[in-house]
Each structure stands twice: as structure tokens, then as C-alpha cells.
Image (cartoon, rainbow, N blue to C red; front, side, top):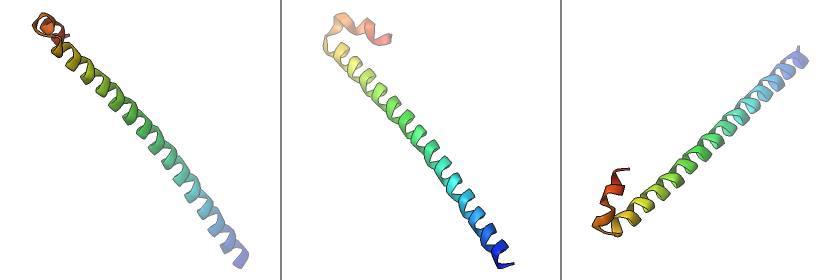
Length: 64
């Protein structure tokens, strides 16, 4: 009986670790996606600022 209990505890611990690893992997993927989106957004804002600083002749480009 003690062996069965120990085996069940070990299997439960293994399932928990696998679940934690999967969750950590998903969190890493979401973090990577958020970082890429933020970087792209930063580049887009910098581009708009550059266009705006060029003066009135480029204001039509801001609507793009």
C-alpha cells in the first residue's frame, strides 16, 4: 500500500512539473510576441515623428 501511495505521489508530482513547464513555455512565447509588437510599435512611432519633423510638405504622409 505504501508503495502505491508513493507511486501515485510521484506521478502527481511529474504531472505538475510537466504542466508548469508547458505554462512557462506558453508564457515565454507570449512574452516574445509582446516584445516584438512593442518593438514594431516603437519603430512606427519613430517613423511618424521623423515624417512630422520634416515639415508641412510631408503632412500628407502622416495619414498613411
